[in-house]
Image (cartoon, rainbow, N blue to C red; front, side, top):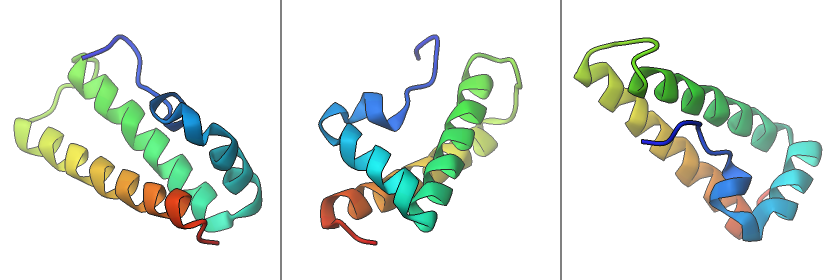
Length: 81
């Protein structure tokens, strides 16, 4: 557990330019990116006990984050618009 949630560009520095490009030019990607970041911040607050919750809720949040990240990475890899 870190002190701050990671941004996708930090997780994938080799894709930072593509992330920036898609955030600006692809509404779907931009929406998924924002949703991922909000969920990531929520999980960080849960993990640091700023917003305590049950383990089941925490695990569900983490599963949602993985699904979003997978979808985002698929768009990055495929160059999907």
